[in-house]
Length: 161
Ligand code: ADP
Image (cartoon, rainbow, N blue to C red):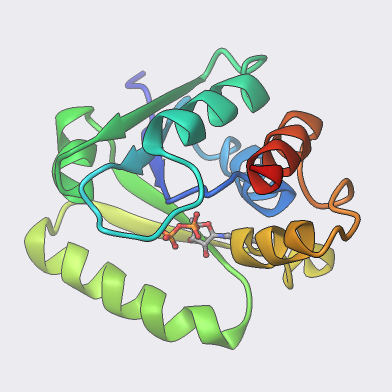
């Protein structure tokens, strides 16, 4: 049978337990999942692309069906190149919906064969975002519940600088 390949694109600045939840649940749908960071997007990130990739690799190192990488291509082009049939995205609140709907509509317009598959966040993680974790870390809040250990360490180090 053909391998079911998917991609999970995101900024991951940094990866949180919310992303991890989507990845773990998303893996039920795919034989191979690319977690991919676009490096052509002008976003004000705390971590560089290399740092974000290295944290993702560390956190996901035990999964042999996940490949972590970055790309300078358009996400849908990357998906096509690796033979993915779908892109995975997470949905938290209603506020994610408008943005995600627009994004998936544009992507569909560019490549009609590639689907966007949404997974609703687990309700106890629906408030969690990379930005809120960064805010919390800045004010010395306890972030250990929201991000994997290595990420918490990297965040504290970064913020002290
Ligand atoms: P982007 O800049 O592409 O939105 P993010 O790293 O912020 O990158 O998010 C990547 C994907 O993960 C998005 O679909 C986002 O909605 C989803 N996501 C982020 N945090 C959570 C969470 N706590 N629960 C479910 N999905 C989430």
